[in-house]
Image (cartoon, rainbow, N blue to C red; front, side, top):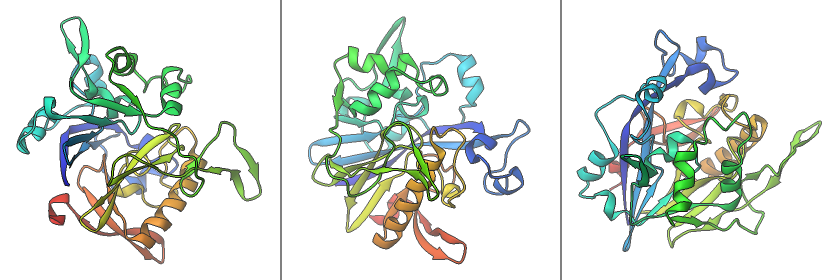
Length: 305
């Protein structure tokens, strides 16, 4: 098995939305905003070479949207999905599987391409993996989240025959599930737990439900390490402190509880966290401090080879 970091450029999002209730006077020290209050974020995917499979985790923003769309999100930088694949000796045609952590546009936009007036598969040989709960959530979006679920990114996956489903796990051993409405007690929201499900010999899928319903986090056993692709549970190292929850999250109290559960497990098991949106840091381990669990050591995937 080999792992490759696939950088597809950077984009901009409102700093206040990315850090939720945390004041700008604090988060601006972590990721300084421009004159429009926008911060720069990575669009970092992960390529997994395992046996005869070449698995891409997420596909970034893509290139099919118009100038007005990209104007809102300030796509910038020299890296592209194609150039990053080529740097490791691969092309789109080599990809056998795509794991979509979730179907928000900045995670799945590159899965579908535009050819003239047609929407086509950007990775023609790949199966595209989601799960039934998230798929239904995405194709019947709520009013708050539908701006992130773009029809042109989602429906062509099924129409082109690429859609594949990962079964939801039966066990109740890890992770957090938000099963619709939350009930509240003096201790906080009442949550059901949801475990992991195997994907390949070395990859398991764990689930999180605070950011969006049934988001998938690949957990990879690699060279005596366990690496977790954090997607939007922890979009950057700056989101590790518990109150740093995005305003984009559908169920912020669930996100908070998921972070508590995950960070304790990650610290105890010495997991490596791989960040999709951190513009500076690719990976880190964790340590416990007087302020709580915090990053310990930052490094790149290359340093694990």
